[in-house]
Image 1 (cartoon, helix red, strand yellow):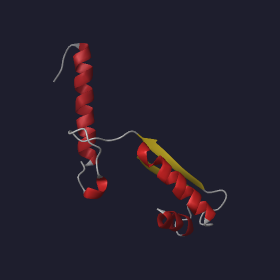
Image 2: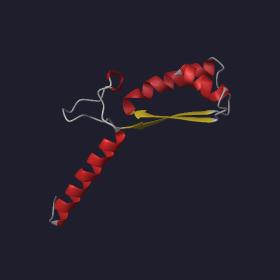
Image 3: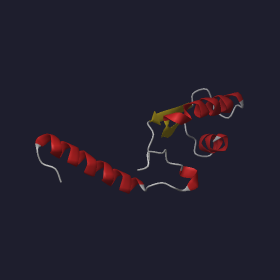
Image 4: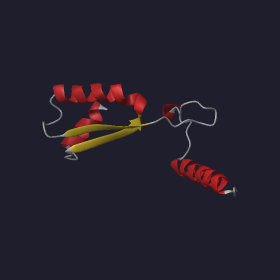
Length: 97
């Protein structure tokens, strides 16, 4: 993560960097951002931000382990979310798929 910040600041000339990950990574990114600042990798005006979200879980209720490659494609996840939402709305309105 420190190398990625350095690359984004020095090569890509980023002045704002967002990391969108699950909320369980909040402490990690606080420490990474502080280390980058202490190391002088990031200029005073550069914004490093963690954008946390809730956990994405598999059908077994366990958190996805992205490093193991045991995940679902985003398109499939979105399709399933839309299907569930439509079904939920349909049940509330008296018709379901």
